[in-house]
Every structure is written in C-alpha cells, then in structure tokens.
Image (cartoon, rainbow, N blue to C red; front, top):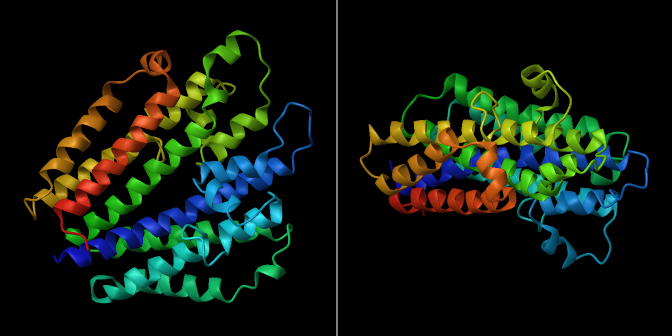
Length: 314
C-alpha cells in the first residue's frame, strides 16, 4: 500500500474519532454549565472544556472572553479551528474521497452524508435547547461510520491503518480528560474529607460514556481510585488506555503479517502496553497521576509519529 493511501485511511478514521470526542466534551461542558452554582468553585466550566480539548490558547488568541456561545461555536462550527467538529468531518471526508476505491460503499455513504447534513446546518438556529440532540447526532454518525468500517471493510492493510488512527486518538482523548481533572482524582482529597460533588465524577465518566458501566463494574459510589483505574487499566472499558493499546498492538501486529515495516512502533507499543498490563493504581498515584498521564501522551504521540515515519505517510 502506498504511504499516501495509508495516511489518508489513518487520518480519516482519526478525524471521525476526534469529531465524536469534541462532541462528548461539549456535552460535558453544557451539562456542568446547567448545574446550579453551589459555591464549590466549579464555574469555569467552558474553560475546563477548552483545556480538555487542547485548544484554550487557540481560543484566547481570537476571543477575549469565554462564553458558552463562543466556545460552542469554536468547538463545533469554526472553519478556522482545525479540531472543530466541522473541520474534523470535512477533513475526514476529504481523506476518504482521496482513497474512495479503498472504502466500502457503506463507509463512504456514512462519511459523505454526514458532511452534507452537517454543512447544511446553520449555527444560528442551534439554541441551547437543541444542542444536546445535535451532539447526540454527531455521536450517532461517528458510530455509523465505525459500524460500517467494522462490518464491511476487508481485514487488510487499510483496516489496520484505520484502526490505528481511531485508537491513537481515543487514547489521547481519555488521557487529556483525566489530566485536566487529575486534581479531582488525587486520593488526598478523599483522605482529608474534601467533599467532592457528584457532578465532578460524572463529568469525567460521562465524557467517555462510562458513568453507567462504572457502576456495573464497581457497584459502588464514585471513588477517585476506582475512576482512575477504570479509565486507565481496565481492559474491558472501551475507552480506557489499556483497551486502546490492546487494539493498537493488535493492529500493528496485523500490519506486520502484511508489511514487515513498523518495528520501532511495535517495540514502543509493547513497552506502553506492558506498563498498562502490569501497572497498579498504587504505583501510579505514588509516582504522580499527572506525571503518568503527561508521559503517556508523549509516548502515544511518539508511537503515532513512528507509524507515520515507518510506513512513509505523506
């Protein structure tokens, strides 16, 4: 497979995943902003959302104040913000169109129809009452694309590159959310009796669609130790770091059977996965949750870059 084709498939899938993640973060910001102010110091809702999305600096370069309307437009519709949902969907479609013959009909229809319908939406007509349904629609469209990919695409190089794009992006998103909220997860808060509102735990878990599955696994109230473990080490949680790296390793090994390149990426991936398989929350908290997550994001980017280099992305 040509490096350009591999790159298009990788970024097509990655941008669809990013669009969904941005929609999830926007919903979390919206939900928290609807929560009455209890005086507990959590009213920088939309600033926290921008930080989690990794675009606070880009936002402040163009806007002097942070308001719900400005942040929502920036994250969803801004054509000059490369990680807005609009740009993500458009870029994903452009990448898919460049390798149209490598996609199934169902995948292309999911990409193309999503962009056409999104482009027809006028941001000014989307008031706060319609926002939750619109964000649901974005997630549904992302799921439609992934369903088409998983259900119809031949398990060849194209499939593995698309999976890599999705799970590198998913791992980065989960790590970012945890890193922004790491001060909430520090066990010292619990030990000193600092009362943490339920909404803080739901913020973290809802942003990765895990608030119900958390209760199913732990059958307990929200606890910082368990929340961090669930999103970092649990292999059955579809958006955990461990689950993402299980799939990254599987995809890299699948590529190895077709193309012998990628040795550096596989070696680095194996090291990260071994740390997640053998890690414990005791050790992570002892060494510093923020430090662990920061290092993970650096390593995740390094492995993604190694894939691009070794498979000659253009």
